[in-house]
Image 1 (cartoon, protein in one colour):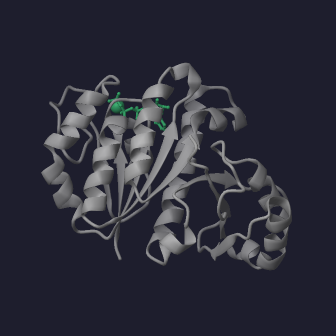
Image 2 (cartoon, helix red, strand yellow; image 1 turned 90 degrees about the horizontal axis):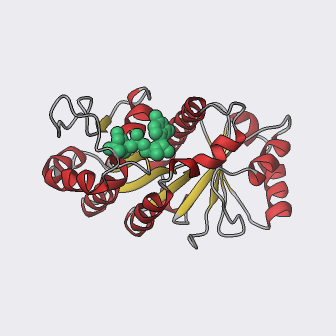
Image 3 (cartoon, protein in one colour; image 1 turned 30 degrees about the horizontal axis):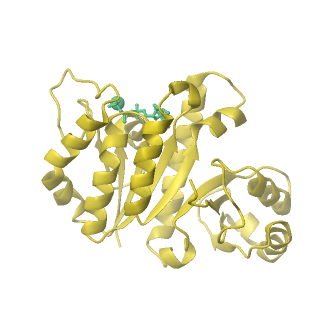
Length: 264
Ligand SMILES: Nc1nc2c(ncn2[C@@H]2O[C@H](COP(=O)(O)OP(=O)(O)OP(=O)(O)O)[C@@H](O)[C@H]2O)c(=O)[nH]1
Ligand SMILES: [Mg+2]
């Protein structure tokens, strides 16, 4: 079961460019794109979703050819611009039609960017197509950030996105759909000293406004935390009333995936 990671748009390219992963492709409307779609001097669509969508349609044969070699596809895009937002639904469609497990990781923009309606429309469309979707809210990432500098928030969002990609890549080759039994998730980072403290913090601090009573949380735990899985299960059950899936990870640290109600 081999997996391809695609970074789509400027945010997607920034995240995926530096990720350490064997199979990765950047799709963007600039000269960095692995599928050259625009003249060399063009740098993005300036927020034009129609251009992003039309280019993805024009290059759908190339996209089909690239993804056809894989079983699983993980895509990251920052919603709000023209490229990632315009192309995401078509990429999802081509991937699902080709029979790949298709997991999207997307961020919704900050309020001050004035792009949230556009992002929400694309998100609604995407949710109907992709197998699973993982949501990040840039507003929440910014509010948790130590810094109020936009570039710092972006860099933190990049790190979070890269970590999610690597974690999903680790799980996606196994019985993925029975572990991630809901359609949409967000993530929580952990904080605290003991494994129980860390998980309690995570349950209360997800990066998208989520309804934790909806479905099962997935705890992707390093060996240190996994050792305490029975106690963690008790903590999660007593706090949220749900029985979590606790999956052992070879990666360092623990991330909690929290289901998001699709009443968007
Ligand atoms: N994680 C991350 N998010 C970003 C970055 N740059 C922008 N964003 C967020 O992602 C949204 C989309 O931005 P881009 O990815 O630059 O837009 P695009 O898809 O390239 O679209 P156009 O440039 O308009 O064609 C923005 O509204 C921000 O909320 C980045 O480098 N990393
Ligand atoms: Mg761009």
